[in-house]
Amino acid sequence: MSVIKRHPVITFFLLAYALSWAAIPWQSFFAPGVLVAALIVVSLTEGVAGLKAMASRLIRWRVSWVWYAVAVAVPLSVKFASIALNTAFGAPAPVITEFNVWYSLPIAIAINIVNPLNAQLPEEASFRGWAQPKLQTTRTPLAATILMAIGVTIWHIPLFVMPQFGSSSIEAAATIAVTFWYAWLFNHASGSSLLTLIAHATEGTIETSTLWQASGDTTRLTWLYAVVWCLVAGALLIFDRGLWTRPAADVAAADGRAAQRVGIGA
Image (cartoon, rainbow, N blue to C red; front, side):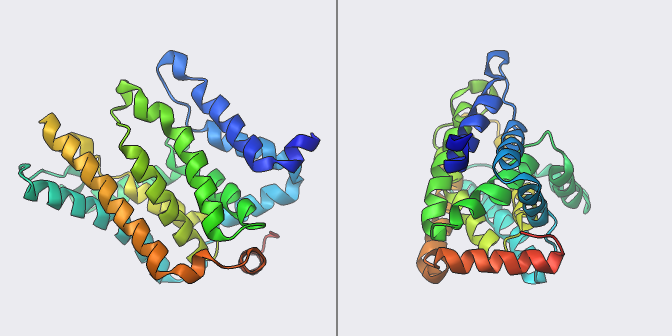
């Protein structure tokens, strides 16, 4: 138990790997395992207070409307930019089924938010709901996010290498980049994992892998998508350097004030 308390985040990631990868022999991936791992580690190391803090971040809705707009606009912009670039490089114009009727996109986002079997809810409740702020108690957001990017990307490795998931290794670059985007949004949006959940749910609404039948067009899109996300992450790092270098004490204090506004102890 002392080892777990000394290294809770490492323990969390190791347990998340074990639980999520346990389904690999059945050609599957148990995404909710990451949330189960967080709940176990938080219960053992922080008790009820830690679970309440984790829940506080997931229901932290008192955030400026600007961040709600950003949470939706950025992932959609990256999707559209990647699709437009792919078309410019020769792919035929795709038909996006999520826009067949006006309410298709909001419904798809809502389903991604509430469905515990999808990756979005388990990931955001655990990665941003606990691991990111836990690392930021003793590190700058930049240092914490670098560690998060490593841990999160390793967790995704089976998705990159197992052909039944339809992913490729280049998507690891996009995973690293979006980890910086989610960290940036999380820290600007008063430590709300609800906002990162909305962003993550939005990112997963348009299934780009089915937009083109030709494998060359799909492969090109995968590269373009990773490049666009890397450009976004680079811009966030360059033009908002002050956020990434904030002292850990300042970040923790801001998280505590945000938790008090919700009415749940941090």
